[in-house]
Image (cartoon, rainbow, N blue to C red; front, side, top):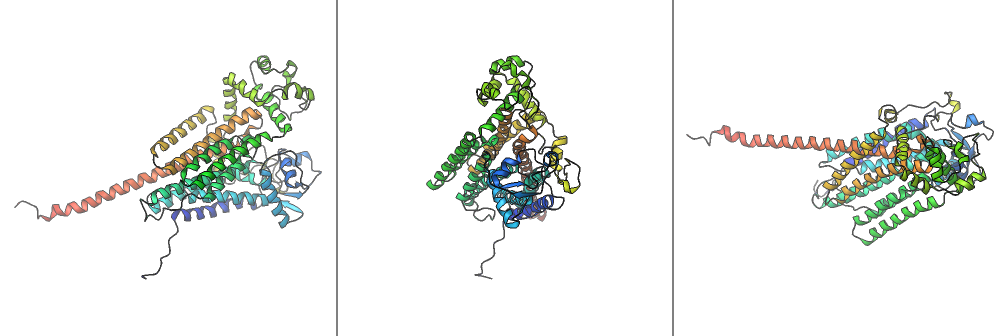
Length: 531
């Protein structure tokens, strides 16, 4: 009827986002909450988070074999809040989950409460990424692209290799959801910048949103970036990369308030990285330094005497080369005060970095070891089931594991492969960035993906220099997250390219048919024939 307002149809990306959220929620809920409940067994790292969060083991007398490595635990009890010297904002999320758990059951903490918190954060990130997927010409094409992007995201990031971590006290899932939320916020800001730029040229396109990037999206990016940088000491340097990106975002709007918020956000991100490194407990610092020296620089060296002399380490500690900090029956106990005074208090990670700079072939050998472990999303020595489930010790779940198992079993795990992947990835990003002149939103998205790749490379470098070859399968988790985002973005680019090609061919075919319809009647009519 005339004069009656028509209801605006939901945008196709919005529909795809809600469908994706429902599908992902069903998969994660099935993996986490339907018995047998999944988790990841403790390798000894849980207690420093649990104590600071007011959570304790259900059975204080539990044997070592039952508590560690073999079986995940579903039920815990509440305890006192102890600092333990562990610094991480990850503790805050676990403490919040503990508070919710106390409301549900004041006596027993069910790990599924923490799993639910992670699921909510993961679904939020997925919704934002699909909702603000890059738009194409035509609402149906945009909807199809967003739906395919959602499928890629679900297959990769709802994989049990990632999801099982949600029901553990490891910091890895905290870093995962923080990374995806930061990526989602950056993608949303880029999308709004593009929409705002194109709205004046195409005012009737329903895919366009005239709203400029909001302060809330910038705040989400900064908050997620701070969470990532403070998830664990290894990830702290990533905060500097994100600070550069926040500074870049400050130039996307001309108003003074936005620019000020962007620069403040960049400062907060940089400061969080500095504080995370500065507040590292001395004990943890010495553990990591021991690992980087004896289980890193001196491990598998062909000239042990030379390397020890170069680092200024007395010959009597030669027997420690190749040992880790937690190994028993070493020739010198790792906690020996003389070892600490003569080696650990005198050297620093800077000395290890300089050693690798003088001997790049040694660092390349470490990178090769990392590449060999770089395709495993989860540690295969930590079980997923509780003992009460009646499964074998250290048994793993392979439900919804197509992506993680393909990577682990079939993807090349050589340094040359990863170097080639990075080279192609950055070449494509550079080409995209170059073709996006005058499109600040598209350039921001390319720069964000470039930062993600750099964060993955940084995670490997920091892990090797900061902790040697210790537990590489787990310490390369952040590298896997970043590499999987790189893979997902490459697949998404292929999807967009294919849809663009199909649409172009369809438009070209339509133009040819229209030309035939217009021209042919003139040829057949005979009115223009010569008599």
